[in-house]
Picture 1 (cartoon, one colour):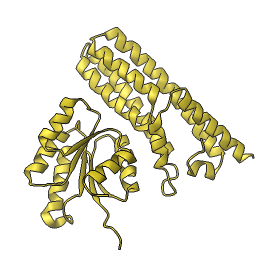
Picture 2 (cartoon, chains in turn red, blue):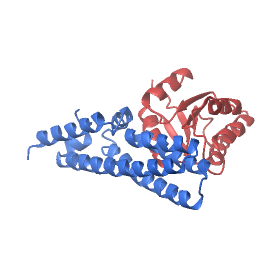
Picture 3 (cartoon, chains in turn orange, cyan):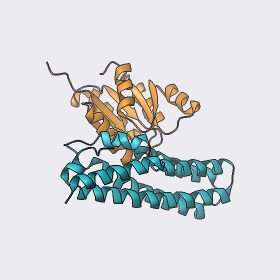
Picture 4 (cartoon, helix red, strand yellow):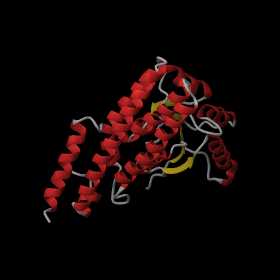
Length: 130
Length: 151
């Protein structure tokens, strides 16, 4: 029986990070939607759970610093919608205060950029998506 | 044409880039993402990196002039550039990014200027070396370009 492909939302404003992360995710068999800022991410999540988009994402990976709406605020708003999807911050900001700020916003985990196969493997195993 | 010799030369060139610290393990991670569906993935990412990093350095230079002693702003630009360097494993460039950020932290304008000049030199060097490397890979033929080069 074929395993359902996991549905991932990648939230990242910088193209080079999107290109690499997209390749890592697709290599792991994921279907990937992309948002270039937090506001777009919130819109996509809302669309998904609204019945028009095929159900909630299995995983959300988000950067912190983005135009329009940053990753912290996007995480807060997604959680405020009652969405329980694992949210993992993938960010260059790696100080304990940065990690704490993300978890305070509702993120489940944090990994420093860039996303690699190994890091994704840990994330998928942690949230039983492998 | 001796394609296997060209591939050996490319492998040797790449080994040199790692041995001299220009590239780190992340470059191998990017290579690992190349496959038959994306046979030129590595070169595409590298081209994107140089386009991205040139723009970031230009933005930073403008900020140095337009916003004197605005270390927070300068640091924010450099953080972005450092992140970009990390994405392809541009190790020596990353070191200069860190040096610049240290100088920002110390409020050292001269130090920042010096770090930026070194960063620009490393950027130019890496670009030249990677361009030569990919040119050699292309000469080595489709097998050399589409598969992960042998180290």
